[in-house]
Image (cartoon, rainbow, N blue to C red; front, side, top):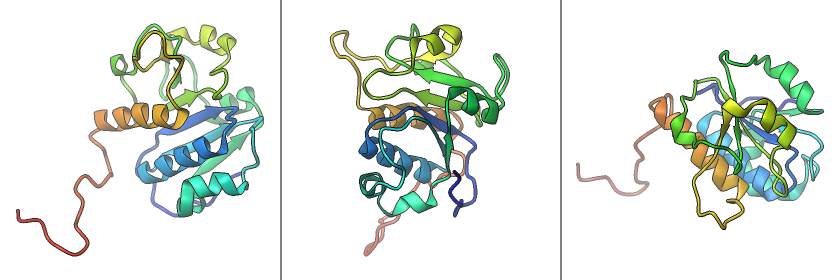
Length: 181
């Protein structure tokens, strides 16, 4: 399933959700993807229907503007992405189990960043097969994980920062007044 793109592509970054379960998280992530020009990939099975009102509510009016691609399974995603180990673009696997942090890697402008389902993360078989590309967000040892949509925002914005926020508006404007300088 493909949704029509209503904005020019700003970046070729890709967020991948492996079997997401909570529609509100996916909706929030969709909104982040729209705000950054990032493509969202959803790997089935999903814990909700894509047209579910909670999913759209979390993404507000942004959901129709989202470039979203749905893949039947992980293998179908790999085929569609066309990524090969150690070549660009790369797939980064965000997991609490990784040995290095997201700040230690170099993100390419068309890389994929995968996150696992809320209850279990990315399957360990996938992680073991891709160990050099596993990354984590530092946190206290006794904390299981961060919220999925928060994790996506943290890692995605770091990847975009490293690329100079290419194509993104860095300065805002007031609605009724003007800045003094």
